[in-house]
Every structure is written in C-alpha cells, then in structure tokens.
Image 1: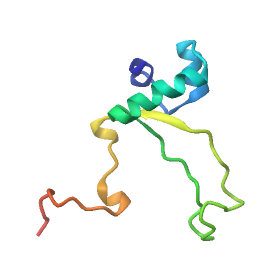
Image 2 (image 1 turned 180 degrees about the horizontal axis):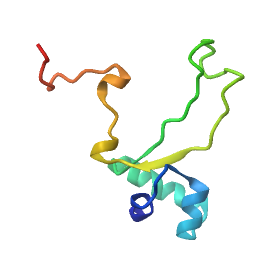
Image 3 (image 1 turned 90 degrees about the horizontal axis):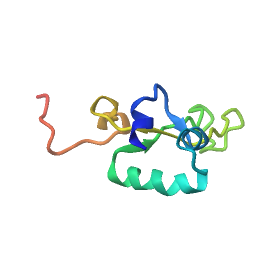
Image 4 (image 1 turned 180 degrees about the vertical axis):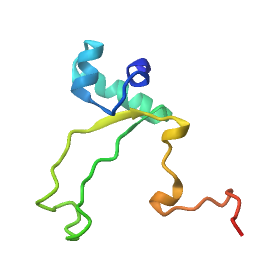
Length: 94
C-alpha cells in the first residue's frame, strides 16, 4: 500500500487509493488508519477556515474538501514553528 503513496505526486483521496488497490473504501479505511498510527502516512491539511471572518470552520466561503492522505517523509515534515510549538530539545539560536 505504501508504494501507492511513494509514487503519488499529490495527496490522494480514499476513492483514488481504493481504485488503485482494487479494494472498497470501507476496507481501505482500516489500512489507512494503521499506517497513520505508524507515522508513515498522514491526513493532508485542508483549508477549513478563511482566516478573516473568525467563524471557526463555519465560513460560507470555504468548501469542505474530501480527506486526502500523503506519505510522511523527512522533507514533508511540518516545522514545529508552523503550528506554534517549540521543542525543548532544539538548539537555541542565541
């Protein structure tokens, strides 16, 4: 299953992965969650707020997109500063 993600250029939706593996989306859900727990794939971040109206996910200008998943690689890791988290093990820049 991971080879599907390794060859993908963009994040994949459940129906796309199911078609490639010839399984039902219901069967695939358990497989996906297994690899998410292992840290090999992750759910892709999707835009859920416009950032200007403060509607907490209820903005009428943002569509609800289907869940997509992508392979976790060293280069695709989200920097902690992006999510406003610091690591006590990181060297300081002072």
